[in-house]
Length: 307
Image 1 (cartoon, rainbow, N blue to C red):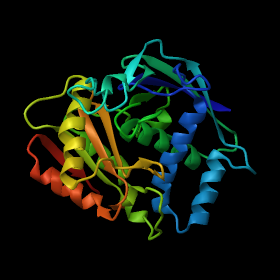
Image 2: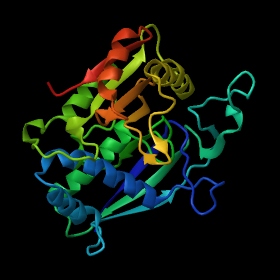
Image 3: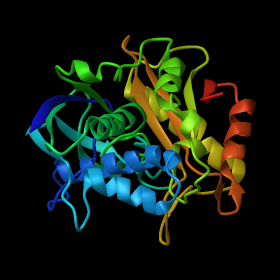
Image 4: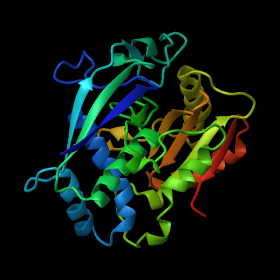
């Protein structure tokens, strides 16, 4: 069974737990579930039907009738835990804030800590399927996060695959001043093969992706990024369009908006914003975010497109 090691560095607090919800725990089931989610995000643009997507997904990730072709193990765990404030690092007390943000917190694995995973492929896993697993890892590392609140900046990790020259064409690093180029190169290299299949699930071809950083300076810490994205982007945008939240728990409506925090090789931080679908509560969120970004002056931004 072919295996390789993956080093993971934590960029923003990871909020993940098992049966004891008060204690942080890295869980392979959760990570595999997110890898499967990113696989579906990528693969949905390349199939002709939902049945074809389900079949392709089951062949790699498994189903009730078929075992998964991959195994994921945790070899070492992070050694640093602190409380994370769940409202995008808002730590204000009830006065003057509208609620006690300082008490809305959970124990988390904290930035700069590391952990290691071992990914193993079944002997029946073909090279093309292995590469699709690597693409899922790349998407998770470069655009996403793990654990709770990953769509609001938490759980960002930087992955590094050890001693695998076979996959060197997948750069898991953001070179300084080349963020847009790296994203374009890897996200849209097969855009010519996209099909007309439309899914309610978020797909690469229907998602708008933005790269953000301040116009006048660089972010040097994850806290700076999260605070500015919270106040100058997320909350300002919600106020502008008259919504108190984008997404809801009851009834469950996953947010069509993901805000993530990443870091270049030079150490500077930047924001990634993904708008997964066009409409939310009869609002054209993709259009409204685009208009909002054009009007504001704090952020320098670029939309990452395949054109």
